[in-house]
Image (cartoon, rainbow, N blue to C red):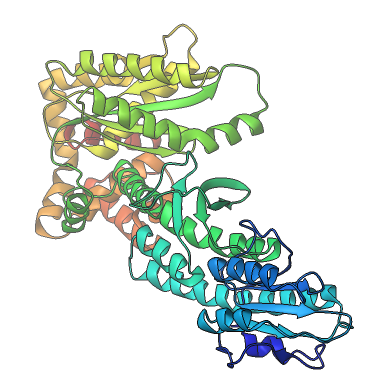
Length: 501
């Protein structure tokens, strides 16, 4: 803190003479400095050091008293006078007024340039402000880490700067109970050159100090502005990962999955259909540009779809994988297809209004009232979407029930003899699972999807040798070879009929 004592002891001032009858409070702080003359109007700030050429006032007590009254009313710190003769004597009424009102009045040598004084004092004040701003920075960070609200931040700034403050959103909506006063200045609060709000204050700072204050406060106050958004983004990312893991084959019945779903307020024990939507752009964009646009906007698209589902009272779980949306749509078998179609109609209408060049192709899994087989439904919806996007004769939606493989499975399932024979192929694996681990059938399902030992090991998070052992065990139990295309086809057909794939 820069004080009257510090000012008097400046090296560039060889002497300073107290013109009043009593020694003033030498520890009173100085926050500003100026060269001024009558009329003062409202130019003087609280705790300001005011310098003037005393010639007009030295022999005119009335003018001197008027000057002093203006400084006292403004709560100035010190009145500094200089005159060519270096000889000043205050009238008794001026001495008495200054003493009674605690105004320090000093004479300094005429030879000292006012410009040098101002430059030196401003430099001192600047470094003082740096220290104050560092303390402010620390105090705000501690408040944020202690989960204090933004009103607490405003109070800390107000106390540190000894002024009124108000914090607003970018639209000037005041946060908390503060008010924007007529005498307040404002500084923009911004990150990456994008303003997110404003700080209003009525402390009179130099331009340099104001700039430092802005750069000090902008990143700190952004923590409060973006905390809720960060929490939401983090929760959304965790949900995205959880739902994507379900689609990729994680077990929804595991204790961990059930606990996680409860924490995330997700219902995973009800029937869902899976919808896979692939995003693309209508115009002929370069592949890199199209992918960049989709990557930059897919979270916003996802949020819009969540909002649409909420407005229609539909329960969904949604995630994405690159430019592909994965939606689990809670349904009833009797009305599932109609509701899904109506939902996708609304999604396309609203998103097309927001993003004119966007287009979708959709694949929809089977619709059942039984517990959701997340992985299989995802694969089936993905297959339907791929058939949809690769066939120009189709509309932009395709249901799994319309695929050839679905039709084939339905025909085979109607053949009771084949159903019985195909089940016999799996009995040994199922019996082995009952007596020991459930992982043989899981390994077979993943392998039938990947057709690759290493990929199977990666998806199951198992060592490659473990997968090789299990494949060998499956071949031993069934008498079939997974290297033989015919045997592989029979096993896949049996698994699709009896265990789902």
